[in-house]
Amino acid sequence: MNNYEHSKKARRVASVVYLLIMAVILGGTYLSNQQKELAAQSAKEAALVTAAPAVVPDALK
Image (cartoon, one colour):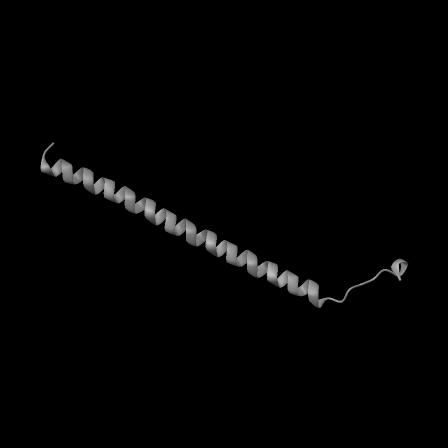
């Protein structure tokens, strides 16, 4: 292989590594945002449950 083919192979390997790193970063960001949204939704539901007065059926009084 001549120098051009070696550099071409190195550029291809570098581009694949770059794409893999970017995929990991973007995937992690997506999962982090999903987790934050789920936590916010759970906190909102918990606040609604604790804010609502307890209803005791007449049979238990």
